[in-house]
Amino acid sequence: MIRYVSTRGPGAPSRFLDVMMAGMAPDGGLYLPESWPELDRSLFSHLSGLRYAGIAMHIIKPFVGNDVPDDVLQRLLDETYTPAFFNHTAMTPLVQAGPNAWIMELFHGPTYSFKDYALQFLGRLFDYVLGQRGQRITIVGATSGDTGSAAIEACRHCKNIDIFILHPQGRTSEVQRRQMTTVSAPNVFNIALAGTFDDCQGIVKSLFADEVFRVEYSLSAVNSINWVRIMAQIVYYAVAAVALGGGERPVSFTVPTGNFGNIYAGWVARRMGVPIKNLVVASNRNDILTRFFESGDMRPESVVPSLSPSMDIQVSSNFERYLCDLIGRDYAALVRLMESFRTQKAFHLSGEIMQKARRDFRAYRCSDLNTLEIMKQCYQATGIMIDPHTAVGFHAAQQEIDKDPATPMVMMACAHPAKFPDAVRQATGLDPVMPAALAGLQGKAEKFMALPRDLDKVRQYIRQSARRQS
Ligand SMILES: *Cc1c(COP(=O)(O)O)cnc(C)c1O
Image (cartoon, rainbow, N blue to C red; front, side, top):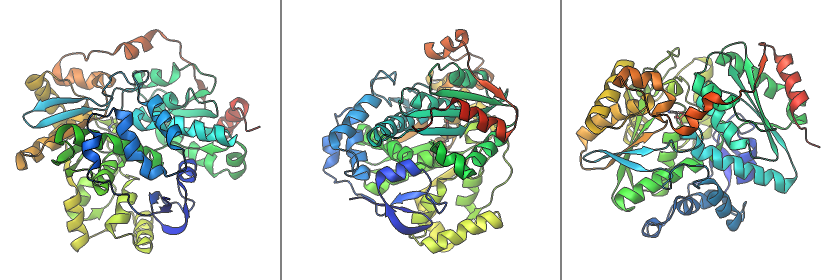
């Protein structure tokens, strides 16, 4: 049976379902499997030809163990990865964008960003487990854009979950706001807070810190530190490797990176035996990761807004998971590094450890100017419109392809260009084609509660609205 440990100390190992319910480990660390499962090499010939949910079963099963019966797990996967929720039968179609380069479109879910692929599954699995245990939970989260709508879409059908999402009033794009506020479901609550994203996040943190309230309403989170989100993202790396290399010839990936969740799933895939050559971290001007791979210095600077806002991050929380294996699972050393990061606002690695890190990942940065240039070039050369996040990846991929033209390169397209029409217009002079579901948001009624930047008012609103555990 597979067991999970915290990055900050092995302690008493936990089971898969407890890890899913808890999100973060009690010591403040992130959960990891005690040891990595290895896929049998003969599995890959068997995977080609399977549908997405079939491949997903083989990849996910070793992490779930017997915590969910096989037939239930396969049913949940089949119910998630269907044309009812994803608007392409391939789920993650590969579109050729150059002689040996492909774009993997991860934007065919209900909210048009890659976060749907993990959250749609997490919502269903959560709801199933809560139903089995006769429990309810209240999910509370803050969003600056994509995560809120993906979480709402993942929970709107869940019988045992109420979800409250705080967004900074007037500070998200109109499309992003409407994606959240036009969802009409009795368990979905939007709060438009008079403040910034940091204010929203501050209030969410305070709610979680209120022990009595947290227990009374069974507060929970679905942010990217939840292991299940990483696990579900491993699947499409295997899907691409099977499609382009038959599971034998290695494939490389470039991933626009913020919280290090998506590309970390690629690292896990390779660790399990999926034939992956290079993993390329693409950052915008908020380039803490690029600087780390160059210098060994992990040192945040202030966040600068860019054309690719979902990557405007200085502290990549999932990096802690990778770091744990990079330093050989020396849990005490990891605690020291995180402590240095907290108090000195930096840590430094060198020598063999950095050599290993540079073998594991390549890293590049991309300015806003280059982002627009690449969006235009890509459109002129291929007729494909890409969003600004995808463009940051494209820019990095071009440099890698020059060094290693023989290995197929897969560039992850993490958002639909229609979510960022202003940048597309600026780059190409054209309006992106709006998918019907996004265009239809215009006419729909919006539902949200406007609240001041006041912890008590927010807590009061949740008390009034949530269907408490009976
Ligand atoms: C969330 C997001 C990212 C960053 O992904 P991480 O897993 O946090 O690295 C990149 N691009 C888009 C469009 C996103 O929504």
